[in-house]
Image (cartoon, rainbow, N blue to C red):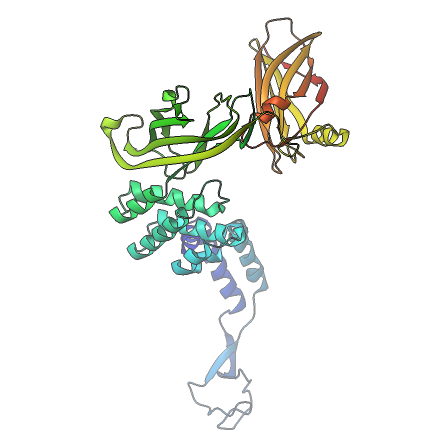
Length: 442
């Protein structure tokens, strides 16, 4: 609040306010004129009174209790003063939207409010805390308390966790605290203890003759540069044998963001019918320093992951292991949930966006383009059912004549859907978008 008042009183309108106030005082409380006596206390007209006390209030009459002359209000000056107040009033109205009573609250209250799940509470509280941090208005104890709250939020991280929005704000604060050397060694250790997760997923039932779909997923929840990850080692064993060459995954350098994940597909062949186990041992190191340069970085933590996942190879899939729908209603729902936008022909390439929201089922598509009677597969994609809006950008080369419309076909690929670790129900059919407009750019 004092910030706003400071800005207000340093503005040019301050002089206008002073002049307006002076005119108002002169107009409403003018000097007395004449010699008519009045009681100073109750303003009673004492003309003709011979009593030693005021007939109205009973005050004793003497030289100090009597004033002489009448006040005549000067309305013109009073109205003129309003013209000087007008610029200040306009400036005040402009300031009102940015005023916040959170600036009047204690830091302790703000820290508690910033942990609320209600965005209407935690957002203004966090904004005010950020303002105080920037203005260096927090004491050392208050800042350390905020760091402890941020570390507690960081410790709640788990793979695929649905984290509240303010958690990311806490991580940003930890980055600021680390850069400013405000974290103790114990706090840095607490931060590193809960920074990286790795998990292994494999399709539980696989059809003989098809590759075994497996997925190695690394998730991290940490600070931005200069923190970075290096995957030092990945050993993948199934049936007592090393499966393929995955040395390309190690070493692998990943600059850390506040939150992120990436997935390696580990498809391999297994023809023997029966139960099997996939074993993955991996080492992930976290460094601080120049990204990708171990010589100029400091090792903060090294994680060893030992993961196991069971799967079965069968001659034929049980009916409940993979469900394929061919219902027209499901296809219509898919068609309604997918739309195209922003298709352009530029520099010998076609660019466009496939948007989707509220998908009724997981599905794998091969994407075909039909231009001037020529049909070409241009892309393959996996999209999973979800309620939020998402998009997939497609691009492919085109060296033929220009065009202003195209047909785009999404043809389901059931085999590809079956070769994922998590799709057990899908739809089979085609979705066709005809006469999609294309903007030709020079």
